[in-house]
Length: 124
Image (cartoon, rainbow, N blue to C red; front, side, top):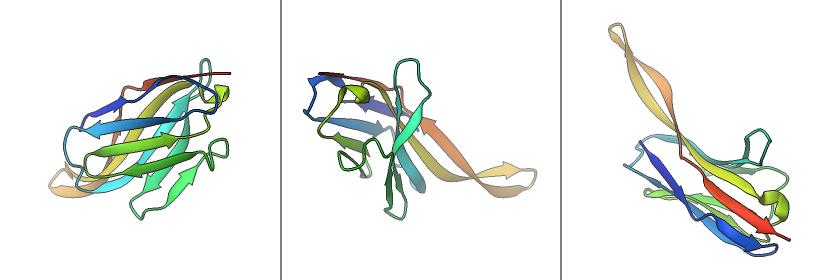
């Protein structure tokens, strides 16, 4: 599966952006999806996650402002009331339940996929 992120851009503080991440194929057994964020010179962190059970988790810095959602075609991040600290690269990420052949057995495993990233710049 290949992920293609888009929707980044340059906005003023307080404005909104909607990031999209399209899947190259339908992910049959999705385990979870997430958006990760990397500010310049900083470590990449997860800012929003959506499990297969429909549970959404958010980093404290974005709670109440960002909303993660998904459908069969892709993954989305609605970002409202953007702040300059939200500036950086956003990466989409998926985990898929798969089975791999080890010897003569099919064993459960997890396949992880990253999108290339889309840049968000928020000016004050």
